[in-house]
Amino acid sequence: MKFIKLEKREIRDALSLVWNVFLEFQGSEYSKQGIQEFKKFISYDSIIEGINNKKFSFWGCKVGEDLVGVISTRGVNHIAMLFVKKEYHRKGISKKLFEKVKEECKDNHMNEITVNSSPFAIEVYHRLGFKDKDKEQTVNGLRFTPMFYSIN
Image (cartoon, rainbow, N blue to C red):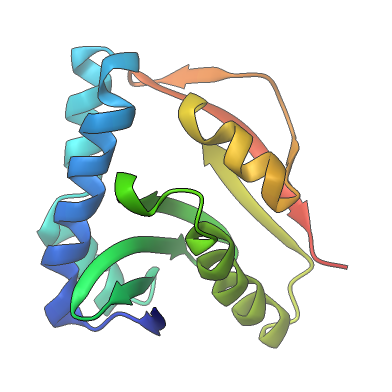
């Protein structure tokens, strides 16, 4: 397994992984509006624009040449996406991807990481050390719980 910062040429594969894992594990928990909102959020053109403007960063986990996990941040310290293929769940991939974000935050003297966790991922974020900041919310059909992680 290798953990790398993804290049622009790898973003289509990353977004395909995100979409497929979203549909498999979370799609049934969202309204049609929520599914459409998520699909719009991960559109290739808007993500590439965000990368070009340094609003988004992506890291991936590869097994051989197969991309099996992705984490993305908006800015430096807000996790926008964390998705791992089903057959690679519970193998420490989310934790190792999260370590990349923590390193980046430490390098930029940040002391908090935030995420708006889907209902499915709350347990994962709790295991990583995140705490709930507020109760579950729904915006534009997307259900999430605001969470934070203290670096220091």
